[in-house]
Length: 134
Image (cartoon, rainbow, N blue to C red; front, side):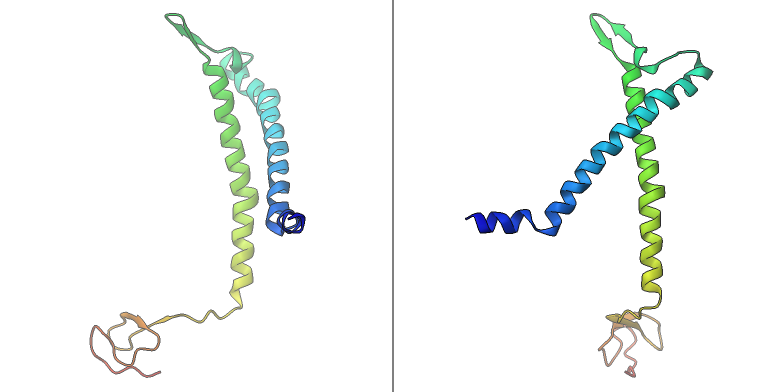
């Protein structure tokens, strides 16, 4: 029973996931601090309001905290931009560069006559009936 648990815990995926969650929480705290302490004052300098979190309005007896939503929205946009520009684009570029020299064996080919896409092992084109050379 304990050996199975040990195998489960020591799997690479579990460790990677745990590290990702911890780094994600730390990153979220950092970005929220950036928005609250640096960006919100800069943006509010132009709008005249010193802190978005105090923005609110009341309808009836309900208070709507618009400022907290704006802070969260700015945090989300910054996190999304950072992930896109510093994670997604570099990983895509690295993947593209690493696959550049590799010859991927396709499962389809173009017909020599009509240029339709046909299975690589086809002896005759299904669209124009041309006999294919392998």
